Length: 469
Image (tube, rainbow, N blue to C red; front, side, top):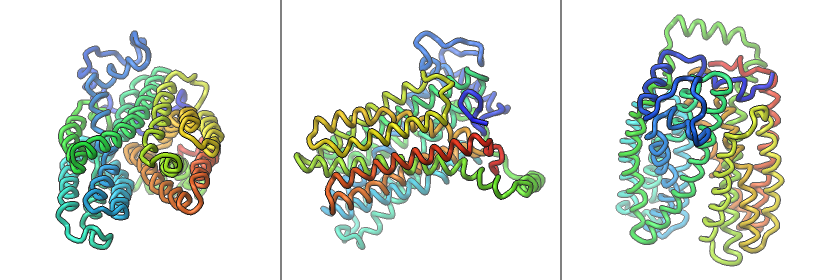
């Protein structure tokens, strides 16, 4: 059996529960033009015009700008610590600490959101993260001996905590969209979900282009601590507003385990064969590994472009070159909402990954900026749709009550992969030049295709129904 968006709903979003029904009504009340479930045709303006009707008009701008601090945090820490200490090693270590902290902390926050609800977790993380970022700023200026890696331990610890506590707005927004769209059955549900996930991937791309650019402008024109201070201010104001938005009640919480439930769960697990358990974990693990490869692609491409740009200009040009791919990727992600439903998630993953691997090989050809811009513009076209597809599959295979955990794990995979790609490509660029470094994104794209083939086999066998919850 092949799972596709037209035939399956996310595991933790269907069937609709009383909490989902209540949340859906609340979200409709927040919109200026409520609509009835599954009965109202798409309004004038196309499928994207339905999104404010599902979630309320304030949800989209809140979800967009509330995730901006996460996009600013890594580059902001790198910029501040490097500027204060004068050491690229310490600055890079601080940025790495932020990335590691985010990769480890995001699934924890997602699991807590599944169990306790998104609102309390987001409110706590917003306050705690604001304090952590403030400590990071103070530590960068006040800790003596920070110019040496060994003496910068307090700064690195503050950077790690800042990354680990950063609110996971993007993944949790996807969870809300999945819950809200699940009240429509059949094609209506699929259209709304594809549209929402397309928008979310575009929002991610835009913020991760805008965030570093904003850091560079503020740090160079005013002061290196200002980007992190702005990120903390945005976290303290926008994340609580996102947390208490009425859409949070559309997501049901995982009930606390009782003895009878635990006994039933143990019985179900005992009935599963080893093969069924392995297939269940593979169904979740393959999308997560795919996002690690996606992050490796991003990190390696950005680092390789820095070496490429330095060969004929300055390394700072790499940010502008990388933004070209981000913009085309964001635009292509929006188009997924209009792709035919018969083009299922399995086929979409394989087609986009194959195209991405083929186009990535073109990175080896240019030697000047203009040809590279053209290659990056085309290369971004399969990237956005592939991200949309992997997030959609993550929703399909997520065990009941674990959707927030899976979504944040997917986002963490990108962060962890970015660190891996940056380090491997950086070493190759240092030793062998940028051409060797560009082989890393090529290999990452090829690995995405192989993982897509594996995911297709797992989904066709229908073993996701046996995934342990």
